[in-house]
Length: 113
Ligand code: AMP
Ligand code: ZN
Image (cartoon, rainbow, N blue to C red; front, side, top):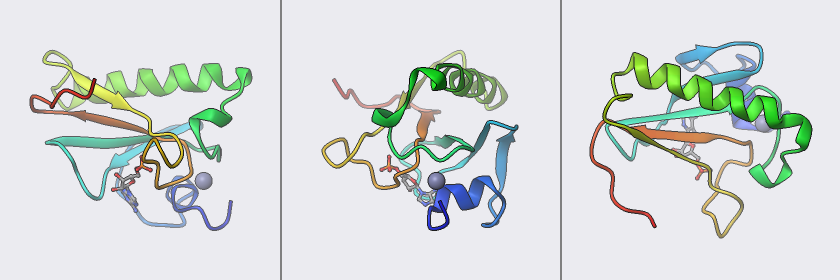
């Protein structure tokens, strides 16, 4: 997707400090952090929303959670805990239409539900 900002970050077209990168996934800091730790974990492959995930993407999604674990350990939030959030479409508050998990932590987070 040529006009997708997260595709540009994933393919290096837009210079961004990456916290993690492999063939399937990249992670970077959210530009507008909502917690002491606020990272975004995205697939390299363009998938607009979590509603568009297919069975064939199950391994990819599992891998994204494993990347979150690695980052949580690296940034010392594994023990105290963290939150993974995926907003879906308009009512879910999604702004960037390229699948991403927010990894939030480093402080006590407010209750969501
Ligand atoms: P969402 O509302 O779930 O679509 O979240 C999109 C997130 O992407 C927001 O938290 C933004 O702050 C973040 N964001 C947008 N553009 C960038 C960027 N260039 N680099 C890092 N984070 C970004
Ligand atoms: Zn994209």
